[in-house]
Every structure is written in C-alpha cells, then in structure tokens.
Length: 80
Image (cartoon, rainbow, N blue to C red):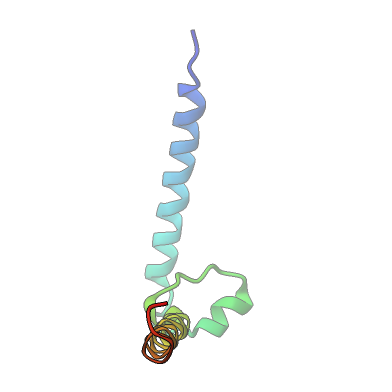
C-alpha cells in the first residue's frame, strides 16, 4: 500500500538540493549586492524588517490616530 512516501521523499530531496544550491550561490556572490540589482536579475529577495518598516510605521500611526479619536469622542460625547 503506497501512502505517497516515495513522492514525498523525492520532493524532499529536490527541496534540499535547491536549498543547498541557493546557499552555495549566496556564499560565492558578493555580500554587497543591492536589492535593486537582485530584483533586476530576477532573484528572490528575502524581506527583512527594514523592507517592511514603512508598513509597520503606517500601522502604528493608524492605531495611534484611532486611539486619539476614540478618546476624544469618549471625552466630548460621553459614554452614551
């Protein structure tokens, strides 16, 4: 009875090989490659906190404005 183990193992071996190939490529390339160069070459870019910093700042700003609006509404209109 086959439970798909062979296909799982084959996929796992392929994924390991791809990871190892990517690891070797990153070690052989210069570490100072800019993101724009990587995007032009079609390579995948690992998103880091610096890439998402603007989105987090907008989220925090929106939450802050919402809290201020809620507090002002509560003060001027009361709990009713």
